[in-house]
Image (cartoon, rainbow, N blue to C red; front, side):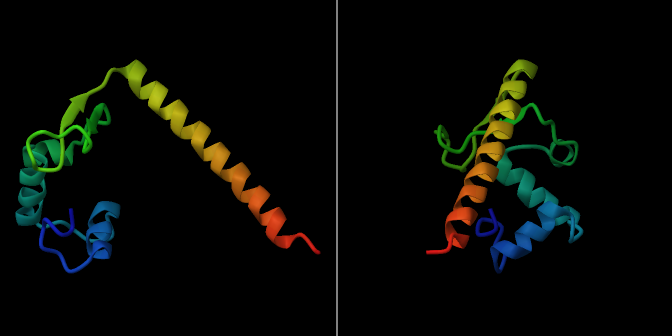
Length: 101
C-alpha cells in the first residue's frame, strides 16, 4: 500500500494506520481509490468487510467481501487460538534457548 501511495517507506504508512500521523483528506482519497471505496467508508470502517488479496481478479490488489457475524466470530476464534499457540511456542523456544548444556 505504501508503494502504491508513493510513500517513502512502509513505516510512514504504518504511522497512518496506527493513528500516529494525521491523514490529510487528499491522502484519504488516494487510499479509498486504491481500495475501491468512498473516503467515508474508509473512515467508518466496517469490521464485517474482509479485504481478500488472494482472489482478486481486478488487478488493484483487493477484493472486498462481506462476512456474516458468525463468520467473523469464527475468524476471531481462529485468531485467538493462533495467538495462544504462538505464545506457547515462544515460551517453548525460550526454554530451549535458555536450557543449559
